[in-house]
Length: 363
Image 1 (cartoon, rainbow, N blue to C red):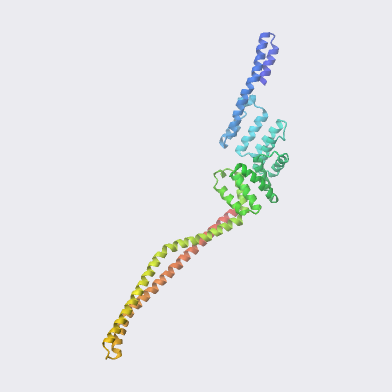
Image 2 (cartoon, one colour):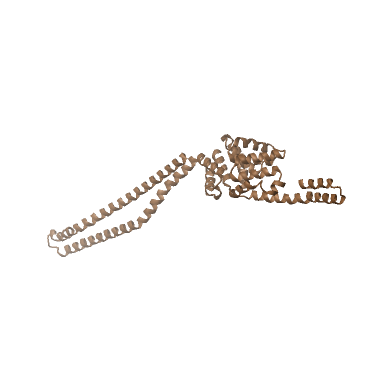
C-alpha cells in the first residue's frame, strides 16, 4: 500500500502527462500484484511458525521483526499474533496471552472469538484458571466453543470439585474430538474419579502413563499427578491385590518344581513297603508249611524259626523306619522353607511399595 501511494504522489508531482500515466500505471500494478505476492510470503512465514518446534521457535521469535518482508508489509496485529504463537511453542504462556490480547486490541475487536480462545488457552496452560474461566464462559454463552476450548473449559472447571460433572461433560466431548491425547485422558480420569467412576479412571491412567506424548506436556503431567492422588485408594487396592497374588503364584511355581521329586520318592517308599509286606507274608506261609510237616513236634519248635526270622529283620525294619521318618522330616522342612521364603518375598515387596508411596507423597 505504501509503495502504491508513493507512485501516485510522484505521478501528481510530474507535469509530463506520459510520465504521469506511467507512474499511475505502476501504482495500480503495485496495488494489485505486490500485496498479493507479499500476502503469500506472510502466509508462508505463518505456516513455518505453526509447524515450529521449541528450538526453531526461539530462532523465529528472535528474528521475526528483523525480516524485511515483515518490517515492510506485515500489519502490527499479524506480528503480535505470530509472536503469541511462538511464545506458546516456547512455553511462555503469559507472554503469549498478552501478545494475543494485543492482536485483538490492534484489530479493534478484543472480544473476537479467535482472540478470546487464544487468550484462554494460553492462560489455562499458564495456570491462571480463574481468568481463563471467565473468557471461556464468554465463549460458551455465545455458543462459540471449539473442541480445544471444551478441553480447556473442562480443565478449568476441575479446579472446583463441585463442578466435576460439568467438567466431565466437556472433557468427554473433547475426548470424542482428540481421542487418546494425554491431556484429555488425564483430565477425564480426574473427572471420573470425582464422579464415582474410579475403575474407569484407573484404566485411563494406565493409558496416560503408557503414552509417548506425555513427555514435555507440563499440563498433562499436572493433571496426571492430581488424578493419581484422587484415585490413590483405588490404586492401592489394586496394588494390594496384585501383591497378594504374586507370592501365591511364586510359591505355586516353586512347589510345582519340587512336587515331581517328592512324588517319585513317595512312590519308591510305597513300593518298598509293599515289597516288605509280601516278603513277610511269604515267610509266614513258609513257617506254617514247615509246621504242618513236623506235626509231632512241640509248638515251640515250628514257632521259633518265625520268631528268629522276625528278630533278624528287626534291625533292617528299624533302619527303614528311621529313614522314612528322616525323609518325612526333610520334606516338612523343605515345605516350611518354601513358605518362609514366600512370606519374606511378600514382606519385601510390601516394604518396597510402602517406600515408593511414601516417596511419591513426599514429592
